[in-house]
Image (cartoon, rainbow, N blue to C red; front, top):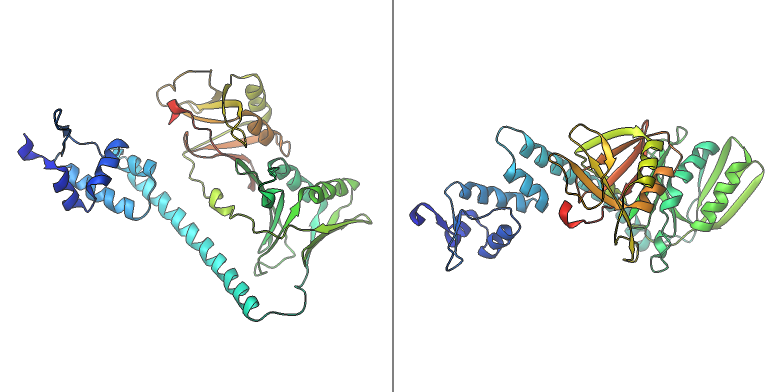
Length: 368
């Protein structure tokens, strides 16, 4: 029998994978030997597994994640699933390259400024935005602002001008909220600009926008942020820190999308079962809600301590964070995007593609 099999050493030489790597992928249930000697523990691989090993080596070379590698090797022939996984990974790589090019362009500008310092202060950026739209954007992201004193860079909202779009971003690492404001008066070729507006100034801005004025004038630059509307004005210093690259988290690859009324989901979460797990910002125990998407496309809160039904997709998230996201901006309808138990959960409002929330999943052993 063993004459028809490949030893682990033979498979390593023929595929380019090391023996230790093959042992790792065996333990990860990615490439399991056809036979393991019960006395010596020596691994033997079937003839067809050589092709799998060679494919695995190439998938590993392009940085495909472990779960995606498992999906490619386990895909049914003719289902097209393997191609979908690879195509999705290629899109992520292309998006990452575009981000890298943009960042390198800014880096070159910073290098030029460093090597040829100017004595004048940087020019101010002035923007005129609809007051109600800005208020709605702040309402959509404020809940996700960080409060950890050890992460001061997250203690505010990022105002990021990207062409003719002003994007507001807030995150505390466990959740992230984004809102987009199109600015027709700003040319698409406008240089990128941004500032981190601290929490207190954000709250003052939101109070200012409640005065009923139609427009608000924002000014960024020189380490200051100011806003004026209806004859009133506020001003304060921005955070002189480097905000993390939030675009990395926005490159989602959801496998499932489901729409439902926001009030229905809020009611289900508030009344639904929870389990207690370490899911808080500092590792403390918090209530966790498990969302279950059935094969029929219906979303529900899973009962406590139950196994997923066949064909059911589940994801666990911090219950309080989920309720915050569902209340933010007071949407009437929602679209939830699920990628699986270890993928972030995206919560969108129909018709507002650039405004959405992302919740990091809580690892529940029976779901992984």
